[in-house]
Image 1 (spheres, rainbow, N blue to C red):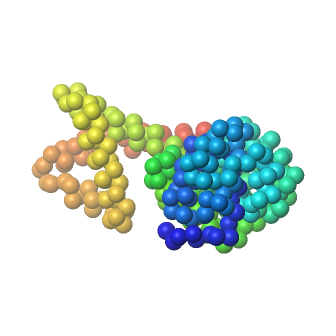
Image 2: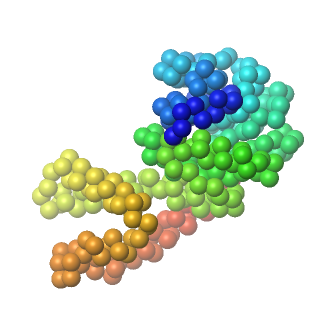
Image 3: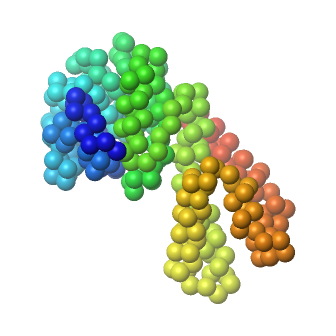
Length: 271
């Protein structure tokens, strides 16, 4: 990451919860935006003070102050307060680029409240907390290519990011937004299978977790050629082949299809 990529950016953050903290931690670590140019606000002053003390940001006492000092905004409040936040932002909005990580809040909601708002909707996920997040950004037609490029770089500070369209956001919610919970369950179930055979759980969960981490890294570094990677592990007539046969003969594909579909349908219903 280039040092001080965006000296001209004055970032305002509304909402200082865990996800905002994760994103801002990546921003600070990579020096993507200078800490002195980041202005943060939370309805609970202790939340903004905590981040300010840790990274040297400017903790402010109102949304009005945030908008007066910034040219870029990150919305990271709880979904149930977004309407109140938008009404307050509307009073002081002056063409700032808005990045929103608020779940379920569609671009239309912002545009219905604030005319000509420059809005990019973002779907992050919780591994951002360890700088391994996967984010998808959805630019509105009012934004420019420069805005989109900024958003991609911004979210890349806490993992990887792709550009998408809002009609795909509910699928992304199911796959990468909710996905960590599904992987946690699979990793845990594999470890518990070893426990049933007489293995210690703490050692089993380490083996299962590190194997998942290493396997994911292998996929990323081998052009996503998963079939070839499976072949590389599978010796004809060997142990892995037996396990593969069990998986192939199960209905795990149907289970995962239903998991992703039902999760996507819930996201549609909420949005």
